[in-house]
Amino acid sequence: MNRNLYNLAVLVSIFGITSTHADISLYKNDNTSVDANIAAVTGIFYSKKNYIPAQEPSSKSWQEGYLQYGLGITQKLGHLGSLYAKANLVSAETWGDGDAGGYTDGSERATKLEDAYIGWKSGQLLPWLGEDGLEISVGRQSVCLGDGFLICADAPNVGHSPLLGEQFNRHGGGTYYLAGHRDFKDTAVIKIGGKNPLHGSLFTFKSNNAIQAYSRFVGATLDYSRPEKGSLGLTVLHNSSIDQDFASRVSQIMQDRKGMNVYSLRGKSDLGIKNTEFSFEYAVQDKKNGNDASAGYIKAAYTFDTPWKPTTYYRYSRFSEQWDNLFIGAQEYGRWFQGELAYNYSGPFNNNTQISNIGISLTPNDKLTIGALAYDFSDLKNQNKTNYTGRELDLYALWTVTPHMTVSPVIGIYKPKVDLAHGGAQNGDNKTNVYTQLTLSYSF
Image (cartoon, rainbow, N blue to C red):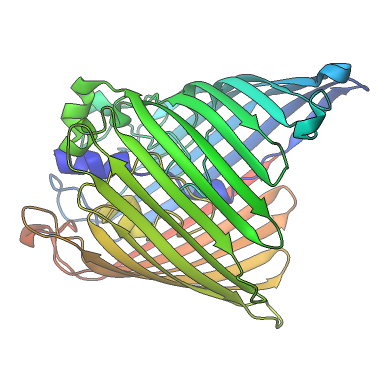
C-alpha cells in the first residue's frame, strides 16, 4: 500500500495545457477593473484494463468535470504601482466506474475554494528593476517553477478511493485526471526583475493535500534569459515542515522529505542552429534522514521549415531509486507525465526508472495540432519493487474549435512487461491495454 501511495503522490493532471480561461469585464475605468472568470472542463475516459490490486480484472469507464468561477480585481495606485486580487470557487464531479488506478469511485461531488490571493506590482516605482520589476503576492495560488520538472501543482485529486481509503480523500469532487484543484495554500511569492534578462524569485508554499503530507517548502530561483540566446536557471528548495503521521502512511521516501534540500540547474538554447532547441535539467536531493537522490533529462528538438511545421524530438530522462517527485506539473502532453497510461494509472511514476521518449507533432493550421508520443520505460532496480518496465504509444490532437472552446482526443496503447501476478501493476494479464479519452474545455 505504501508504494502505491507514493506513486500517487507524484501525479497531477496534464489537462492544464488545454484548459482555457477568459475574463468577462464587469466594470472598468482608467484605474479600476473588475472581471468575472468562468471556465468549464469535462472529460470522458475508458481503459480496457485496470491497475487496482483488490478488484477483479475489468475495464473502467468514467467521466470527470469541473466548473471554475470567480472574480478578479485590479486597482492602479498611480506612481505606487497596482494592486490585484482574485477569488475562485470550483464545483467538481466524477461519474461512472471511477478511474483505472482506483483513486476515485465515481461518486464524488463538491464545491470548494480554489484561488484566493492578493498581490502588488511596482509599476514604475523602482525604475532600476524595470516596469513591474517587483511583485509580491500572498494567499492561495498556483506556484510553478520553470517547466514544472520540480514544482507546478498541489496534486493529485483523490476522492473516495477504493485503493487508498477515506484518509486521503481531498473532498474536492474527485477529477483525478482533470485536477480541478491545483493551488497551494499559505503562499508568499516575491518576484524580482520583471522582464529583465536577469530575474528571480523567493517563495514559500504549503500543500493542502494529505497525499503530500501537508508539506511546506521555501525556495528561490535565479534565471538569466535572452530570446536570441536561450536561458539558464537555478532553483533551491528546502522542506521546512511535514506531517510525519501522514508521511509514514505514504512511503519511506515521503518520510525522508523532512528537512530535505533540493538543488537544480536547467537550461535551454538553440546553440546557434536554426529551428533547433536543446534543453536539460539536473537536480539533486540532499536528504537529512535518508539516501540522497538525483534526476535529470536531456532533450533535442527540431522543427522543419515546411508546411504543417513538423516538429520532432528525443528526450532521455532518468530518476534514481530514492527520487522524491515533489509537485511536478505539465505544460504539454508528455511533460512531465510520461505516458497517459503509464504515468497516470500504471507506472513508472518518474521514480527508479529511465525513459526514452520520441515525439512528433504536426500543425496543419493555427487551430489544430496532432501528435504522437512513444515511450520505452526501463526500471533501474527490480529487487522488492514493482516491475514497471514497458512501452507506450500515445496519439493525440488539440483542436481549438472556437476562441473559447478546445477539444482534445487521445488514444493510448500500453504494453507492460509483466502483470500484477508476476510483480507488475496491470490487473489480469500483461496484454496490450487500449485507453481512450476525450476532453473539452470552454471559457465563457
